[in-house]
Length: 266
Ligand code: SF4
Ligand code: SF4
Ligand code: F3S
Image (tube, rainbow, N blue to C red; front, side):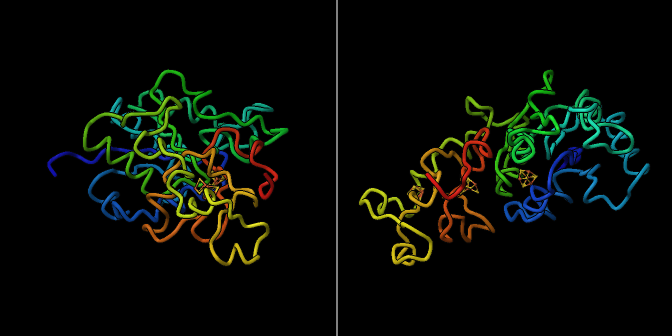
């Protein structure tokens, strides 16, 4: 309560903004609590009231006034083909903005699969030359929070961990917060007993589907996916893809858009 709020710069690079859509639906903590009591969201192209030069100046003011004392969140990949023309803001390429912004930051959270593994933009043949944050940022700690999009409480939980303990959370060998990414979807799935019993949905809307059987044969990637969906769940713990009858597509796994397609086949 006595600490000043931590300045945060949130960059939207080559992305679809759905990660931000997820972020603003956080329930633990509530977004209002996060924004008014915990962090100072000094720059967000999407959420800021200011726009144009005024908002770009806000980013530069944070970099100048809070040197080595602000956090950067990056949503989106970094397109480097053709001198980066596929994403430019205020006359700068995504790569220039990212390099400039992280230079005096504490750490960088690569938020969402675009930022951590280039996701749909990086799908073959990757026409924009999309790169992941880790490929560009070499001199600062990078925390990967993958998912398309990630669960809101996974990103806000990662931020709150830093605020509470003053250090980045323990990471897996792939650089993801262990608390959220060290368990396999398949090992916590409510349909697992059907998998073990060999009771599979053969096609959508068949009797097995209506009875909640295992979705493995219609493309479920739960056996190879590490994420918190089956435990934390979505929308304040209401449901998650498999619970609502859709296979896990493996959206938090590396190179998933190339490896998991076609989605509904094994
Ligand atoms: Fe959109 Fe998915 Fe990329 Fe997030 S990771 S910006 S949801 S395409
Ligand atoms: Fe595993 Fe998917 Fe079947 Fe669940 S629905 S038990 S995650 S294969
Ligand atoms: Fe993604 Fe699978 Fe969760 S598709 S949202 S990791 S259930």
